Length: 197
Image (cartoon, rainbow, N blue to C red; front, side, top):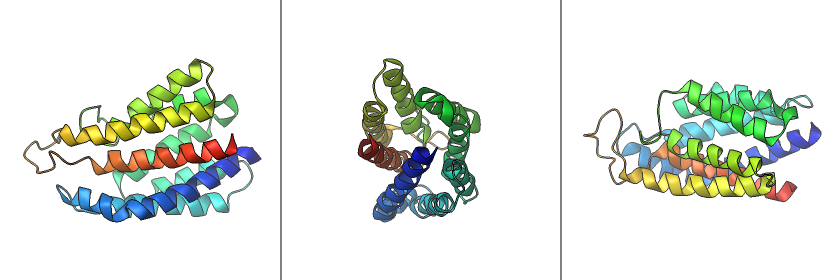
């Protein structure tokens, strides 16, 4: 469990740095059709998770981080919290169980589907891809790297999607901010897994 805690803390450190660097860009994307605070909100969620993980008891870093993340304002924060909570409950069962729990939590926490221009557009295909690679017996490092690549491509592709709730909004041609921040987060996680491999 100490290894899990170390990975979680290192990943959150990297996530916070990456989101801080991207905050203005994410806010600008969000401002195209919404209130322009996605970057601020997702960074606040990750920062709260980072602080909670840093002071969590042994074996509880992910669970504590997920609870803190979910408590921050913003729908993406609640989704990351739900996925983290689900993953924390199956840590001992290994990578496949962790990925599957996170995906199931995502699917049960939102009615958005792929193509609706949301966080689901990156996370669902990325987690699904990670599952496939892990089931083949590939390492967590390889699965995480592939998933990060899938997420990055999927986030870019959301620029071509119309908003599910209002096709008249002006965000056609712009990537979804939640999809974009998710790709950033998965990339940071993959980098940290590579360092621990």
